[in-house]
View 1 (spheres, rainbow over the protein chains, first blue to last red):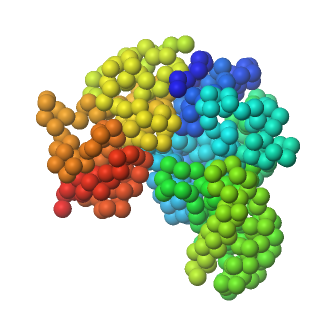
View 2 (view 1 turned 120 degrees about the vertical axis):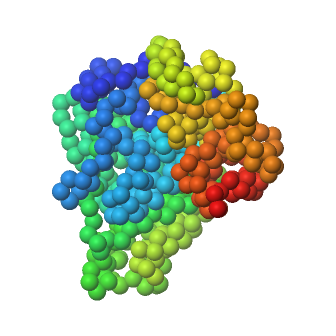
View 3 (view 1 turned 30 degrees about the horizontal axis):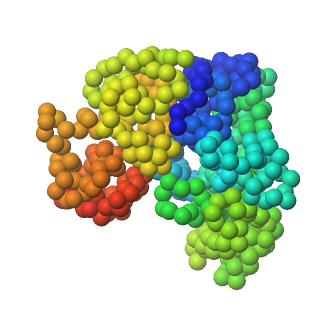
Length: 328
Length: 153
């Protein structure tokens, strides 16, 4: 498969990039391109203009500012894995970055790209020829969902590894548009709509420039567990990020559990946070929390794995992840 | 739309006029005739198209050629010198780590990077290093043995 025709710009400043984005309608930002290039080959994207952020050095910096780490959106996953402060303070972030794709992709794929990753589906992520044998689905602008026939909307699955971890650390992202810039909590970046899963893919004409993560206290324990068919080069079937703040008596303070691969966006089972608050972790509590968590996810058969299987696996990896942070 | 890029390809400085919608793999194979780099899945999943960019292994099918501007690229053609196989290639031959040969250029480049970073890799580190390269003949054990035989101690 060859790439379609497009024009390619390499602005040298953020202002220039935003102006070009505002000027043209059929415009897509390209970061590392490991996912976008495939989407272009499969004609899932039909952009006439690509704007590369390669030549804007400020987007590639990782810095410590007061009590937060600021990660430029164009930092590669290798940069994240090798950054000392991330190794020390954000083990779950490092693990999630490590779990993306393969070493050959992590040297070019970026954290911004992973945050903006499109949702996936076995009827969508296929070549144009393959897709042409079926009616167009919601995801490409049609009127049907091949996965959930009775649904009135797209159920394609959110499959990024890094956003759940960032949300569990309380990260915020900076979005810069032509007239304003805003900083929003990462969970608000996702819409829950399978067709347009995040702010950028909804066509907001903004650029994600940086991610700000508060440096956690020493008593915050975190981890990321990912389940997939093969140990590398695979999207998560289910991934779970757990970050729990423990007080001096080892009771849970704020507990954030974020699940990927189980909906059109990252899912945070609301009742679990309350269930764990002020409790000491033990085997029964953990198993109850995992049971409760999976009642709040609604996986569809967007891969070859059945929703029921996904739910069972989710239960297991959520328990394992909570056990790991609790040292049980 | 075309663009001129400057790069160091296998140690030689080059100015290339490329289409912006060409991947680095297409430029290497179609324009430059460097067909040692293979086109497998063409989706960044199999690692047959591995090249070294500034010394690091990258899937060249997933990288637009224009993004290689200003970088140093090494392909499998740069590994053997003056008609003599590189020690990695010799080890792959001797250990039977080559069957159909389609994954071999990628495996060798990944090994080259691994041994430069870590001259004495353990089995786990070897498996991690080749985790982006798929061998459909499934000769992984021989490949791991070949790499292990090159470890310094």
